[in-house]
Image (cartoon, rainbow, N blue to C red; front, side, top):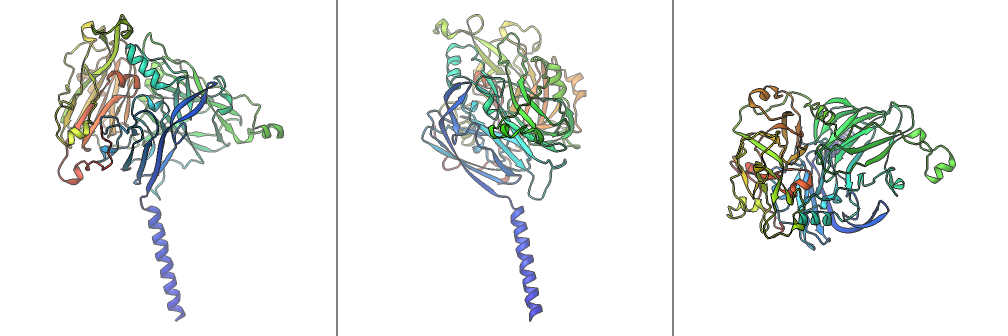
Length: 578
């Protein structure tokens, strides 16, 4: 009898253990509530009533595992319309949760709410979330960390600890007012007054030393830094004094490790790096400042800092410990010159996938998109104060000479899914309407684009190649181009005009990097490929928000495939109405 009892107990223990292990490994649903609200935030000696999530600036960090589901109820208690975009999440069949205003949903009006539901599938690493309405993302943003599935490990040495660094941009004004004034005048908006790391400008700005972010490290440790460029309008260089950085991931895809002293991130991009505590114990600045490739234009030339602090130097005396002070002045890294395009290009060209990947080799849709700025002539009924761009014009931007206009009464996805006419047209050009010397001296007759809400249709499963070609209209510039709903392979990039005869030979079809945002070189080009396996309406746009407002965007309209698993889910019951 005792033997039977022991066997029973052993069996019960094994059952409970296997059940516990299965529970550990099962994907989870994470429920969160985001309240969009005005919150007093003091930076650069002044208090501003900034729009935040849950009173936090930056907003909450969401931590999940690959395979988990996120359910986030967003309640809008601010005075502006708002939506939230989950930057880089594939949103397989859940396009209603993607977030760009008037593309996949109508905005959440003041007093309204909407619940975003989506599952993370096959993505690991660092992404982020942000407002996708007006310029609210200046303060409404946060990190989205995706760990490997329970029981899985990183494809690199497990770090001793991790730190997330959100690089941001701060205006000593209401960012919505900055945009509103630029829209009224037709001129470029005022540049920011500071860059930030986790919402703090750092030691080099007025009234900012107290909040400077400290990142701890110990001698011999190897730690993971998750770096996110959440700045509104500025690509940034990032470096840590006297330390090398080993890149192991970007945009929630692992990379073949490579070592560098400097990162360059366009807005929207993320980079995961390992850093080792192999320097004399001290305090070292982590610093970020502008990579600015446009010509003859103002920009924010300030530098934001945080401090990498070795554990053994945290306090030099009991008195200092009590005051929370240290006496060692941090060492400053040498950052590249603001216009150092060679360093930026060398960095972006270093990325590779960890192993051979399946790149689409046969192409169904071979597209060529010019991207760049433009100038609209002053409309006859406008007063001169509304045309304060160069020579009495208004700034604009376009892809393939079409300046994108958002609809106002219905989202593009609703119109696409319900076959409603009059919201958009599906005639976005596959090539520029006119060929020209894209990076040369462009005729003024090509500086004024047409405008419209124009999309490009793709059949489910289409293998798509897009050549993204910068132009020198107004000024060449590095454009971080982000595609919603997809990751893509970057096959090559280069300078000058893309030449299909010679540049095709440069394509990496073995281990190209997978990204969701590509930094198209100033006066250059980049080539991406993806398979259209996610039905919906997916915006592709420059992630410099000033350029989105000017119209540097287009939408891919991806048809449903065959059956439920190749079709977008029905819209949620609480989808906001226009």
